[in-house]
Image (tube, rainbow, N blue to C red; front, side, top):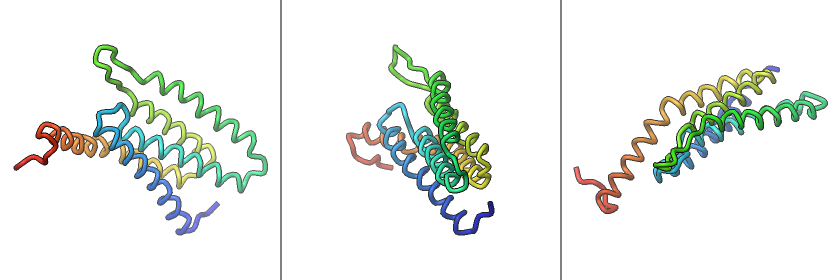
Length: 161
């Protein structure tokens, strides 16, 4: 199954758009000190886009998608329980931790599904986006969170340098 340059670019744009929209929503949540943030929602959006793209792509080549569809659904449901085990809520402070780890578990499951389907280019592109989110996303989120915190400390006005 050889892909053209246009198909490769289209896959990259779809996966990139998923990262962008998930990350933007996550950035908003992180800036407001919510449990989910840029990396968590970026990974969740990327993983769901990846599995959707794989399902659509393979529906065209496999005559009976029912068994594959059931396996994918079962895997993603089951892995959700494993990811949930990584989430911890501190009763004293009310803070939640482990959400990015849980999203990483789910993302890894999505990558495993797509590996099983043999969509190697999608695996590569999605892996690059996921690693970028994990490596760079925390710094971006911290930068914006610091700016919001500084504005709150100065009564909503930008800090004076």
